[in-house]
Length: 334
Image 1 (cartoon, one colour):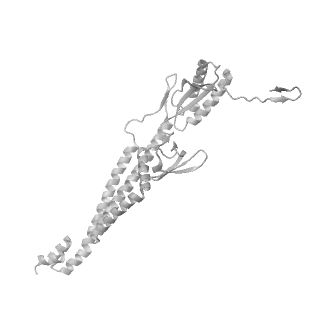
Image 2 (cartoon, rainbow, N blue to C red):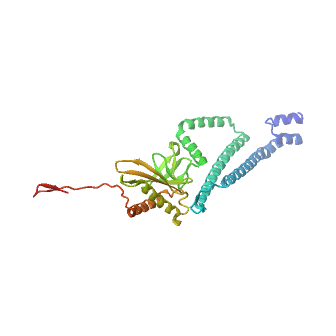
Image 3 (cartoon, one colour):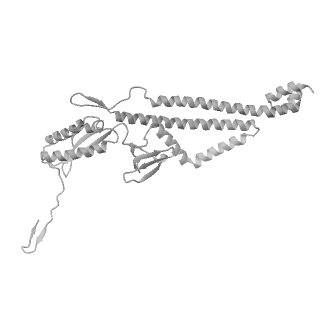
């Protein structure tokens, strides 16, 4: 038998190292031993090395994308307020919150992408290693397809929750610390995962909401907020005077140093909002920094009440009259 034919019979699996050793030595035993010692281990080592290199390169790309996402493309839009003397100040607190939120979101997305890349590369590398060890991977691939179909039908809710969580993070719909309305539950967000969102309402109750069940999100903490006050006055009140007083009180709040950075635009008094059985409703609106609308509204109500008392503007209120019967005279006395 020639060396070439011996190599063909001994290395019928197409092993390169086996062929080379068979041609060099002419020994089938030595060729088989060399293939066993150097063939499969060398190939597996190469697969692992290429997997690690690919993972490192893809993670570097993700890190670069995350760094770019942490920094805005242009100058950040800042909320500025201008006073009567032409003074403008930037809301550094709002900018810091927005920057922190952007960095957290970018890091979360980067971590998610890295996990997905690592999972895919490990699965591919493991399949190739099993194939190199002589394991028939056809049943494995077929079983993976069947398992995928089974999960698609049996775990639809779980898959829906995860996909919804991914899109919520990518779109930055809300984050930890935001005050949101999720329909069935509302409150402050304490944790956001790919499957559930945990929030605590004003009464202290903790709600766990599956991301796949969230159909709408009302976020009261992004970018800016607005305090809306509907002030009711009697029908006898002078509405022109009422609007003047409300505008002065709101403007004083706008110029108050204590509220610098909390009130971000000059307040407005649009006018009469409605007329009810109790009186005339006049609306006041104040644009504020996120999460500041409630505190600003409380302070504004206190100042409006004090100013109305000083100006003699009456706020309608319900009065109760108790009628007592006078048994001696047979009359009714209030």
